[in-house]
Length: 209
Image (tube, rainbow, N blue to C red):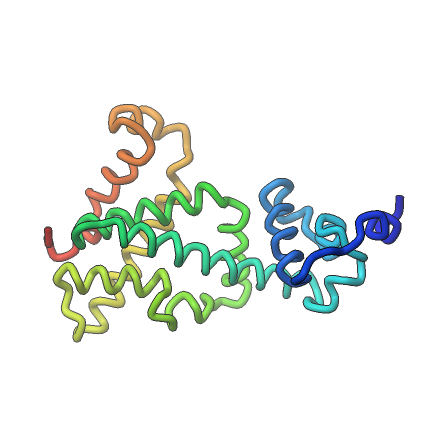
């Protein structure tokens, strides 16, 4: 059956076409990977005509931008929840690192699109740093709460960047089988992540309890 016929067989009932297309794109990303993503494939997954995506996205690149934007929002939310669950800055920094790695591990295709899209523009999205609710600001603010000098903007920006890069690196590395024996010794995945972060002084800001 042709795509147009398939769309007719599944009448469009979504109240928000843009939302439906982004959701469909995320499903395809996680099930089949970025190479399977196209506006036609997303239309088919959403149950709309092949022309429907063009009402919101001029091409695949714009759709990926929208998916990446949602990914950053979801990461912000995950880190916010992790920070809120902590009783003190020391615990909060560890929670933030663990939440970051878990987000990357649980949403591998989305995570890759987030960074690939930014890399293509050589620029991280504005929402990562400009919003006070952003993931970056949550890390920065937790460091300040743990004793870092908020007036030394150069130092706090370096420290926040270092912490971010550390979590990003662990997210890239944590899945390798060579670390399985260390995970076993630590008592599992999460204790392993916390133990690795404990060896990075940045995740115990200011030594605060």
